[in-house]
Length: 76
Image 1: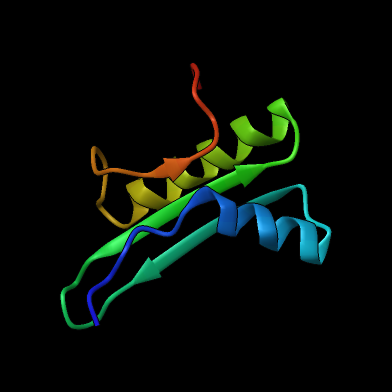
Image 2: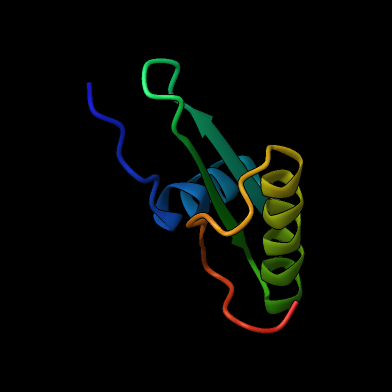
């Protein structure tokens, strides 16, 4: 099965279903080695913190500069 990006709407659904303010999804495909990060926050400050967390995870995994799907656009 071909991997697909995980939309922000999925992270939002998790936040709504389980009552969390921030969600960071990290997914990995063993066959391709592809990694994907999606972030969501319920309020602007949570969006920013989730995005920062996603950036940190990407840094730890050596994925800086790769596409990360998130619902925060702005200066971190």
